Image (cartoon, rainbow, N blue to C red; front, side, top):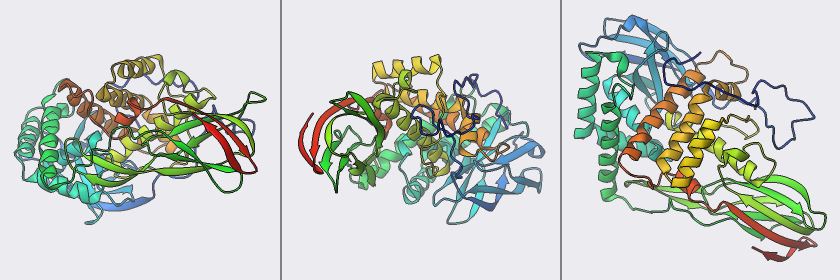
Length: 445
């Protein structure tokens, strides 16, 4: 299932996701293959669609779909319909999409509310869902989004979006989400989000902890293990070398810090708790290299930078999925393939050189959009006919269109969770460590 005419660049995949897993490759750190575990549990729910008065949308020519499946549509009247659709079983709001039956044009967005166990789709949910697909809301949970939606409903900004949606639906509904033909929709969503986040911050505690939090340290652990203690909101790739033999002993990973508390503001802030990752090192004299980078030139490299790039690329894709679904997909990080083209590398290099956070998010969005079909096959290798690729492509496009408004506003250093950390992180860290009888005898940075 494909989404057409979304300005999606041709997919160029250097390492096909359909490669068969074989014993000679499955442990190779360069080639990582699809996981067979489903990313979400499915849940069948019901919903209602109401078109705006005077809408030119042909309700007989609408398809409803979630990240999980295409739904069943039952037209009730010229502007109303009921439907059933399988959604991801999560405890947060998630978007449900309504397109023309050929998937050519996105027309409306609905919201699934797990507390009400239903999907509502109309102009209001379209506006709310649009404002939800804002990368500043990566860590927002159900309670935070409920407050956000309730404040939006009382705001002038949402009223302007609703007036605009109604006007477009009454004149040329197919261009509603086309940024080239209808840039005003995304301008209004950006302005409304800024207004509400600042409003909600009036009674909130600003934590201001999205900035770089430091770098992983190494501590003693039980037996011959060591513990990487990471205060940073990033994954680190780790390459461990034996110094005497000067050989690569292993590639491993360090998990990121965990978000604990959310506080509204422009931008919102998150307080993190450091996380420890234990590794069974053994005794000896080692050089330990850590890297939290996103250098796509090294995407397939068997070193710390390559591992860090793969890990943080996967995390970025997971966060983009979470913006639409409300929860990160359950992935064991064993499934990835080389999705990188020269055009992607140029975009990432440009964002990195300028330290431009919105451009970095846009670059990840393009990577997401260009590979939506194969990412869907990675997530659901046993469901090649799922609606996942259409959902992922549309979600990625809206995220890119929203974040582009930040760039237009000159907010190059806006503290978007994860992405701000990534572009400002300590890329290369090297420790030399001597361990004897399970105890770190010496360590140098």
